[in-house]
Length: 144
Image (cartoon, rainbow, N blue to C red; front, side, top):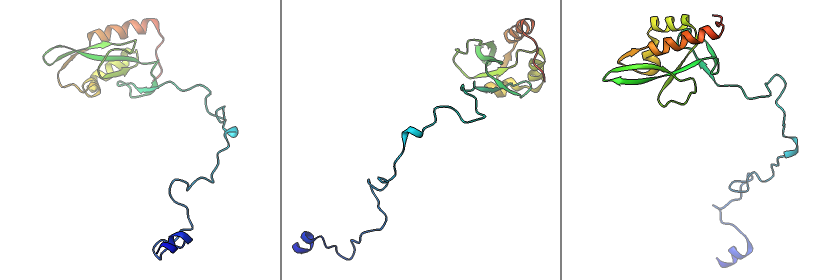
């Protein structure tokens, strides 16, 4: 037995595989780091895209900078207020809406506020309607 281990012979069960396995299995593969692209491929934008969100009124996707984010604040047991969050810093689940009165009316008609914010109580949209009204005066309307 000692001679077999010293001469490098293997028993019948210890056959050498043709394919390397284990830690050194892929050692022959090399990566050439000089060929890594530093510029985006043709057709791709050079700057990263802004996050895309869906308006709960018209259900169109738009950049988050074009939409108004709002959150629900609890003002009593089972009563909530939709408060605009233009800085996008308030805690809680938020939803997005075009700053357009048509999208606000469509969201109210479809009862989308409860689904988007996952609420079961009554939601007061007064502060949100004021923010949308003031935003539509300063900004042009989006096309639907």
